[in-house]
Length: 402
Image 1: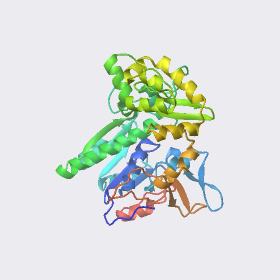
Image 2: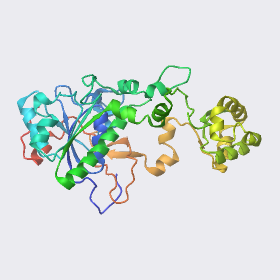
Image 3: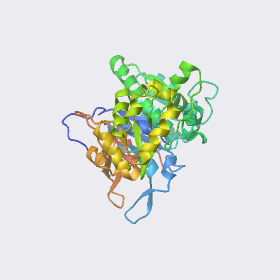
Image 4: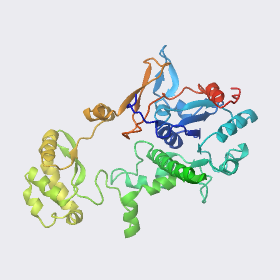
């Protein structure tokens, strides 16, 4: 399940106390676990653990064919972790988790700001007690600001942070991205911040608090559309599959299906037109440069659409690939994950899971390919509370009663 290496995992020996749930925090801790960190996931026995354990309808099944608490959603972000059942509302549960925090290098949580103060697990308390601790707080709007106490879900972050206004058909309503991308990207930023803080800690012995919000992260990855607004003062508009700064860059209808075409520069445009028998367009002053094509988008696109509609998708792909113009299909999830490219790159991994019907679960692979410290798929996403006793024994602690 992992590439062979004689080098220890990059984060071998790092202990991460994971007080997060849903997607943003778990995405970050799964990445840390993939690179060798020991991730201790604290789950509440009163609720049956992480909320996403119940976010079906798809579940891994046990040997008798019954659904387990391993929902597909939960499994997407919780491999390489150990599940510990601890109720923070009890003195015993709080004491156990605080003892784990004293042994951790990193704590990550996604409670509402101030929500852990009553348990003595907030960043001020723990960072004061353990000066080398890296403590990452993930919330909807951050630890400060007028909206700090508002709950934050991915949908709210996409709406508040502007990405929905850019997504969808130009004549349709604003649309969220099809997956929880605000959560996922926030988790990515959390991982980067934690690694940067650990680098500082390793040099100086000094830990720190990381304050990260879904909305802040989502605004940061508005990327060119954010700077388009900051430069022009004009609100960007929805372009559907088209691009605000590159033409042609869109999905086009062929005789038997859709094809994606992304012409990134003027030389590509000339080759593109020649391949479609439209050489005259490449010489037209209205279309010769990308700036001109943006200004005359309305005149160019219908001509391209008519030419492409007469050809099959495969013919278009063959012609454009032959002249090195970026073009490709629009895959379903099934087509993407079963493609020859996905198989060659190991985009799906089978991770042993003894208590499941197949003896393994199929998961999306980590995309990073490191030559000396490769990703390790050590353990499948855990059943609720399965590691409570083992984690307690490892650190010489008496686990709390379930």
